[in-house]
Image (cartoon, rainbow, N blue to C red; front, side, top):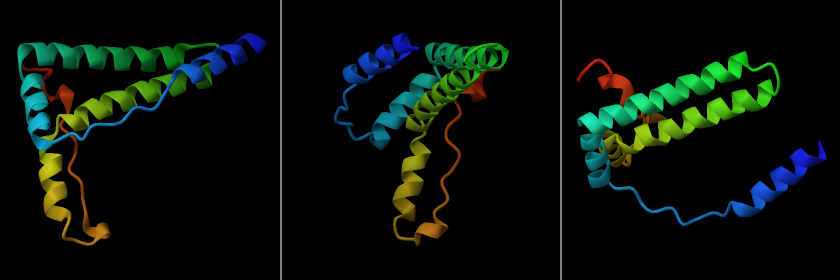
Length: 120
């Protein structure tokens, strides 16, 4: 138990916040264009497989079920960030909706990295 606490403290000390750069619509278009190439499709399949593997590991783990489920959820969240960065339509809708009341803002679904899985 003490070993886990030491590992957590050591890990926490090494993580530092960094300045987050602004992600612009042009960059989203470039990422979305990449995701439609053969390399981008491979990247999407690899992300999907890793997501599925972490999900499978979390439900088959006999020990540390809470940790494994949290890890799988965190991994899926990270993949969702990549998906949202590739969605240039999100930025257009946000710009158009700036004039509306907050309760009227409806964000579109993020560009799904896995929509091209059936295409080669």
